[in-house]
Amino acid sequence: MPAKSVQRPEGRARLNRKRVLQTAIRLADEEGIEKLSMRRLGVGLGVEAMSLYNHVSNKEDLLNGMIDALYSEIELPSHDDDWKTALRKRSVSVRDVLLRHPWANGLMDSGTSPGPGTLRHHDRVLGTFRNGGFSLAMTAHAFSALDSYVYGYAKQEKALPFDTEEQAAVMASAMLAQLPASEYPYLYELMGKHVLRPGYNYADEFSFGLDLVLDALERERDLEGAD
Amino acid sequence: MPAKSVQRPEGRARLNRKRVLQTAIRLADEEGIEKLSMRRLGVGLGVEAMSLYNHVSNKEDLLNGMIDALYSEIELPSHDDDWKTALRKRSVSVRDVLLRHPWANGLMDSGTSPGPGTLRHHDRVLGTFRNGGFSLAMTAHAFSALDSYVYGYAKQEKALPFDTEEQAAVMASAMLAQLPASEYPYLYELMGKHVLRPGYNYADEFSFGLDLVLDALERERDLEGAD
DNA sequence: AACATACGCTTACGGTGTAAGTTTATCAAT
DNA sequence: ATTGATAAACTTACACCGTAAGCGTATGTT
Image (cartoon, rainbow over all chains, first blue to last red; front, side):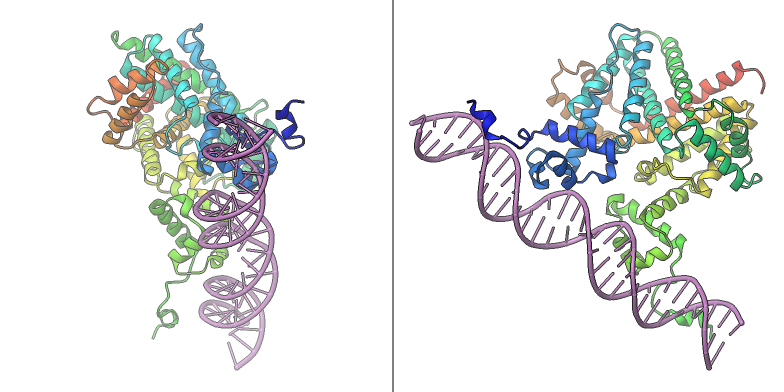
């Protein structure tokens, strides 16, 4: 009889950092990040809260680890596509991940030093610009501009008080009914003539801005001399 | 003898929502948002924690109120400037406010319905696009793209593990020393040949991206027919 | 002067992150 | 297989959190 399996006949496998992080991510997705406490995470893993501290140095470390794990979920820019296609796909993937894990965006401005998944991701994005003919200085510009847009969009999308087209319509109607048109004429116009149009979906704005930025970056690259 | 002044010879003036919000903003600036508790805010106002609930319905309401108050700190787009200048100044002002109150960015994705300061601000931005010759649909695109960039940039800036040029140099040197160059070649290049250059300052990237977006939006406006 | 209301206070409860110390499980070397 | 070392899970405890409930007093109105 194998000794290793007999030792833990009932309880789950031994804890490790990966299981802790993955369960934490799942709990944050299912119940919201504000409900994720060390005690609840312990319950989710069949373990006491303090046991987690053997694999995570404190809650901040836990949250940073969750973020770094998410970076590995993002599709890296492909070597096979041209730079614009590769970065477009990557940017869509970033947004998808942030939609799947809406709590993540707010944790990414902690100013702590990045983990290996984060570094790998950034390295590949930088490389895609460089191999796409961007000078080093222009790569720095482009990296900042593109990611500012992508993460900023995800943030705006989450901040909206509606998700679906129906909710948007309800919200817009409520605002039209309650807000004084004289005070907010342009919001009034936007709600009445744009948001309430059938087929309106804020999510469509992502592509517009993404192409706007990518095309503008291409022009900047071409205006520069070679590296 | 004026009755009103004699009633409170020692204690501070009576509490009101505005004083609560302003003190909360000051405390968040000085000690960090994570240190802002109802009890500490009470101390800062010379009052017990529970007294705050007469002016704020709960902590979430407090935080939303703080955000809305900050929107009034942002310089509204001027009617006198052309649209691009007006929105450029406004965008710079947004970034300034978010630098002054670094905790605010993370609170703005709560998905709650916006306060009057927020609505006023958005209305004026929309109006600037409309009066600048943007169609309604293009205004919606432009609003989303511009604010995604501006708020996203502020977020990226805060997420960086360094603030000043010196800190950036220290950080870059540390990364060069610790990271395997073979694994992160492009990060390596960026740190060694760009960040470590004298005069490097990430803050300079803001203007590049801002002009990139504004110029690209102008193009899009011109490509469209009239509204 | 009397009342109604608004507001500040006290107390209490269930929750949080985590420091400190103890017990148990695992693995390496004999 | 036994021992000893190490890693990891547990128990207890503490200071702090948001806020519900209820009380007393100050304020403003009649």
